[in-house]
Length: 206
Image 1 (tube, rainbow, N blue to C red):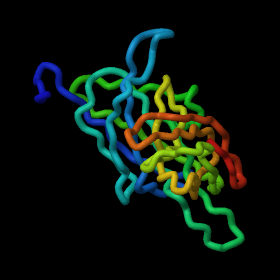
Image 2 (cartoon, helix red, strand yellow):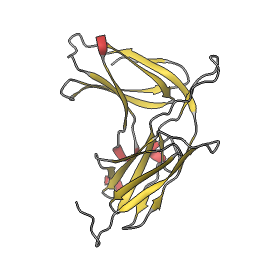
Image 3 (cartoon, helix red, strand yellow):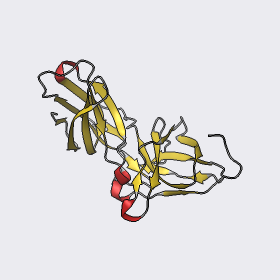
Image 4 (tube, helix red, strand yellow):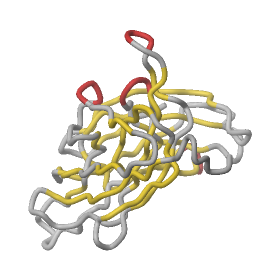
């Protein structure tokens, strides 16, 4: 809709850094609007989207007034300097800086005002997740997606890959709780499995 002078939109902005104070480029910032009150509060299915630049900064214009929950994701895998050193990546993090979706705080957006929402991300071990789709007649064009369980019922999709020959593999996956989603060539969900990733490679079938 056109910008209104009676109900002006807000710009959400600021920076994403790591625990050493370095900027984190290439992170996706997803903003979900909070709907309802009390026990009925939930995140809208649609979301606004931004990506941090080379300075770790992002800017998200045209947010309506209300409460929003923010998800910082994308991993941004850190290459290990030595073969013997475990690579690291940034886990999915929720404002104001927690990896626990239950502890995420909402950002209050007021009409026409800019809102700062910084985040500090702590790197963790990054591993490999691989597995097989245990369906004998898997349709061509099927995909396996790796999602997370976000705040207030949101479910950010992190990455997806074709299920070639019933097998799939994800690399550089940080520690955390994930959900595997199998979709067919019509983008219909046909299977789902939740699992946890620690500091070692994981094999999980769906």
